[in-house]
Amino acid sequence: MKSLSLRLRLTLLICSCFSSSSFTKSLAADTIAANQNLTDGETIVSSGGNYGMGFFSPGSSTQRYLGIWYNKISKGRIVWVANRETPITDKSGVFKVDGRGNLMLYDQNSSVIWSSNTSGQARNPVAQLLETGNLVVRNLEDPSPENFFWQSFHHPGNTFLPGMKVGRIASGLDVMISSWKSTDDPSPGDYTFEVDPKRLELVVNHNLDLKSPSANQGQGGSKGNNKAAVIAGSVLAPLLVVCLGICLLIRKKKMEKSKFDTSHGRSRKEQIAEDEFTIPGQDEDFDLPHYDFNTLANATNGFSFHNLLGEGGFGPVYKVTH
Image 1: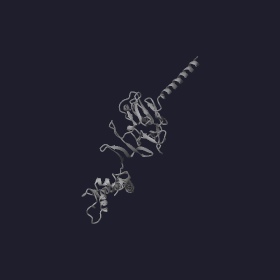
Image 2 (image 1 turned 120 degrees about the horizontal axis):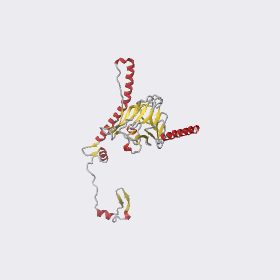
Image 3 (image 1 turned 60 degrees about the horizontal axis):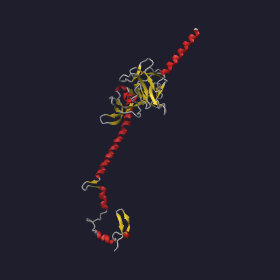
Image 4 (image 1 turned 180 degrees about the vertical axis):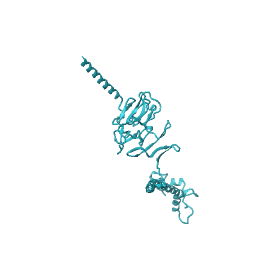
């Protein structure tokens, strides 16, 4: 009897564990709830399979980052990185959604490596990877985009995806695209793509920092100075070419403008055409004969069809009958 009771308890325990395991995985594969974790080696995929999210190491680096990549085209093409400036040194990373709707990334010491700092407080928060590549935080019962508590499209990396916006958004946040430092380092690099709020123009900025070596650096300082000069030259040379092209364009426009004869209000081409058909020594027009309508009608038999020779650019041509 005891053996039967023990077997029954074991069966109930196994079923309970299986049921619990099934429940924790009952959410969609593109969603992480507040009671779930995403560990290194696990991924979530958007509903249509276009994008995936998980941990990765860029290039030849061994550092670990949480990111989103193209899932169908190329798994190596990263479009967004959470902890761009704070990599994890091993594969102990854990990604969670807390009860307030904050996205949290922890290392092996349970230290917060990165957080979304989500504004507001969700009742039943979930993180969902949309088919657009946008990672959003929302209430489980409310999928409306206008009610998202946080979204990765407002914090882009080096990739501009369809649906993204650059510039100042309604929340007052300035959104910009920034390059990676290198293929092995996704931290912000030298180039940014943003909107100039003063001129309302899209601009690409190159953040070049040239430092003058101190006098006590000796030989090492000389090498650094040479390197800075090479970098400065590579940047200034294209600018000089652009300036030269602008100057030539302005000069060309001025030359074309000077071709007009302002005293007569006619272009130089018109003046040349007139000169070519002017007989030297002949200042007045030729005396051409004039015919009235009746004379022309009589000469062509009333503009008869039998006198019609054809038609040219100025109208019909008639044969004159004497």
